[in-house]
Image (cartoon, rainbow, N blue to C red; front, top):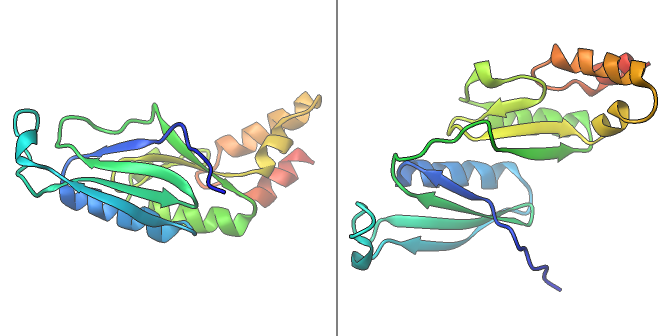
Length: 166
């Protein structure tokens, strides 16, 4: 039985090469991922787009079953940290995998507290699911220690966060 996905994240890339490269990277990083549809610009798009007829317009794709769309929209807009994608990880090995693949070629200055920016400018948070448990509950001192430890990290280190929790 298929699930209806009401909200689909939509990426705007500046050119067809970046659109294709980003989707190729993302679908190679996450399991159960694939391109599901490709659309091309038509001559009738010329009043609203400088893209030539036949040029790549969108790539619909899935990352671990979640639907996304990437648009070759031109250089008008840039990604910002105001929106990020969270990658929930069940182990340090998953954190290491996603961090390594998504941060490769990205802006190292944008790496802090599990956040990174990939080489296309998209912001990601690579987070162990256990972090919520370590930060929640009535023990404010524990949450403060975990937060202080996390603030010193780029890639999150689950063992160090557990040690900070005590």
